[in-house]
Length: 465
Ligand code: NAP
Image (tube, rainbow, N blue to C red; front, side, top):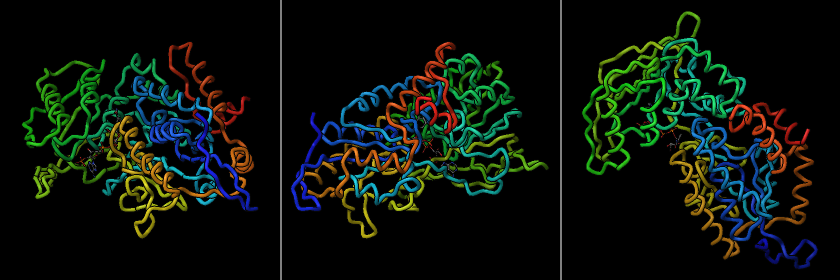
């Protein structure tokens, strides 16, 4: 399909046909779904990412033992094969290029850069050695170059994971995977080595509310009961399901009740799920390293809004451990120049149209994915989310409400500007070099790939060296 063009008056007064070109910032699922829909609507799309590698959390977030979930990249590869698609990796908005520079070159900018920062618990001891956000641990085992040099001591028996979402399940599972479960994955080599030498045999997952309020999805919770060397342990419980409980919550309770009925197992490792506990303090030993978590027992109370809340009792308990991973959600980080709602941790927007301080939409600026709606849903949720924003963009295009790029904003001028600004800018061909290198390195061991985990190596391989 030919790229969508629009008549525009140039600086010297002549009328020229200008291809309508959109910049998308962030090459994760929401960025790719938006790209696909915009390409199908006839726009040209330039997809930017801070890393030379595309696919965002599919590459650096999804657990390595979930290859089926990762295979969604085949769909994104089809999008990238479109004639009017270009990838500019290794380019950071707010550092290498500015928002104003993008707005001067594109009919619209779509922000799709996700929510990279972890939520904090705000309790004493959170900064102790051995207390980490799960985001760091996930980035580390997935070979994200920003996290490669982090160190996680695994020379202790018990780790505590705070949170009852799928990220908590992912990190708990990764900690107890058997060698043969880890072997066929693309877990970064430094993490494989650390997991092989790990002494962690017990992982305790702590939820502040009850089994009926856990944020797990059913397949992920069920998978926890099928690990080769780890038993799942749940104390018998009675769960009060609200009348309007979702099918997911109902099924979660059934799965957890089945776990509670299981006879004690004899596997070498355990994942222990505990509910209605909130951490109040992380304690350290004399060397400043995590030694225990103090938790308070909660009772559940339904508020006037119908939401079930955890209310602390006066009963406390100490859980000894050598590591604490906080998996209590993510939040967005402000990017210089781009509107940001610090309370919500996302870009202020109205159905995907970025809004200014007065709440009115800003011309030519849109948001998709987690930076638009917050960190919720599964990968596929971003398809509908992107479609909602793209519908707004198309409506604005029909009414001449997109941005008006300046002269010299054609495809070649943009590429030349980027090469000058970021000499190592990585194109889709550069990524294909990395992909080929990684998959070739993984093939002899039957692994999908061996990840290149350092920025300088990624850039060198992308450049074909
Ligand atoms: P999440 O699903 O929102 O879960 C966050 C958990 O943290 C909740 O259990 C929440 O409890 C708890 N929490 C929040 N603040 C807390 C505090 N101060 N103290 C104790 N607990 C606290 O977030 P997530 O696990 O980071 O996942 C993000 C999204 O990615 C989710 O939509 C998830 O399904 C998705 N994801 C999917 C997969 C997959 O499909 N395999 C894998 C990973 C992530 P309350 O409910 O009480 O607030």
